[in-house]
Length: 132
Image 1 (cartoon, one colour):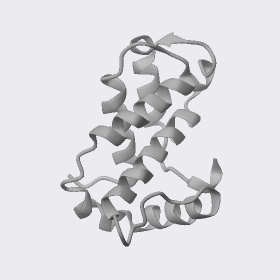
Image 2 (image 1 turned 90 degrees about the vertical axis):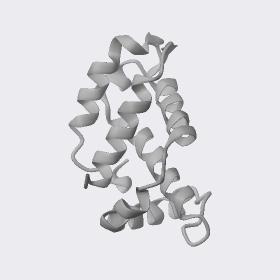
Image 3 (image 1 turned 180 degrees about the vertical axis):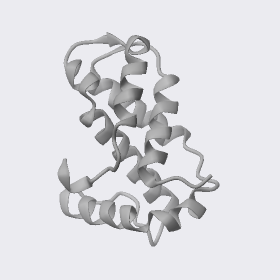
């Protein structure tokens, strides 16, 4: 199935979110979901999808290099680099979510807001790194 970079990031964020249980602030829930993605993302068919993601990957590289540095260099560890970009994109999705921002500092049961978060994430048409 062909999908955009943003669609893939949303899909992975929703999968990880639905497996996360407990009381978290919106901020901490975003970090927990990002960690789950980092630990559980299967990259087996990612390189096939990557060709259609060249612009997004390039944009992430330029943004990350300028703002905070890159942990995984694409020429040395392309899978690690792609995973790094998807984890960061998941954090962006939480930052763009009205639901997550409304609970940014107050703990809430993650299961109680999953549907609202999913709807917020699905409204994102494209992740633009330099706009955060």
